[in-house]
Structures are given as structure tokens and as C-alpha cells.
Length: 147
Image 1 (cartoon, rainbow, N blue to C red):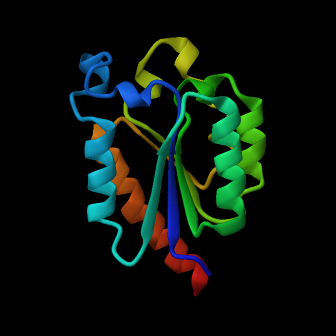
Image 2: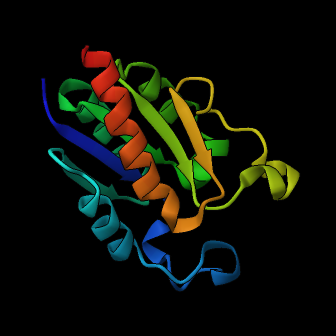
């Protein structure tokens, strides 16, 4: 089995550090990628970001074929995309939905995730720290599954 963890990021996350820092902080996506690699251990991190729903779905399909685990921050697609949800349904190994902010403390439109019901776990509200926490948690979930 592969030792690759996909970390997929949706729209506008390429603007981290500049976009609404009162909500998302000043950490950039490049900083977050570095944090993920620092805790990856024996795993390789395949870290990607897109503003395209189509591209995000294609990457979930790719991960389905080769990844040991998947972390996804679908961003706005969390609340709008049944297509991304359907692609995640096909992922047969541990998966984590991740949000930088606590979506449940935000406006009501952010409370209903299409993704939460089809992933293994959800992490929200830890800021950029949520990413390395998710990598460490996913490593444990993968190892449990392999036993």
C-alpha cells in the first residue's frame, strides 16, 4: 500500500495570509504545506490547491486510486458541492474534512457540510494548526487500518 497522504485545498485558500486574517490568520498555504511535511514521518505529502471544482474532483479520484489517506479542505465547496461529496464517497481509506475556522460558530450558511457525512473525521477551528494535527491523526488512522 502507498505511503502517500493527499492534502487537497479548495477555492480561495491560495489567498491565506491575506484573505480575512481575522478569520483565517496570517499563515500562508506555503507555510501550512511546510507544517504538514514536518509531521509526515514516513509518509509523502501530496499537497495541492485549486479554485476549480472539476480539478478538486479529479484529484479526489486520483487519491482514490493511490493514496493511503486524504485530508480535504473543500472551502466553499463544503456547503455547495454534491459532486465533491460524491467523489469523496468513493475514497475507501481514512479521510478527514478540515476547516481552519470553526464553521459551526459562523453564520448559518456555514453550518451544513455536504462532506461531513462521507469522511472518517472532521477537524474545524484549530486555525492553521489543524493541518499538522490532521496529518498526525490520519497517520494513526492509516496504521490502525493496516493492522
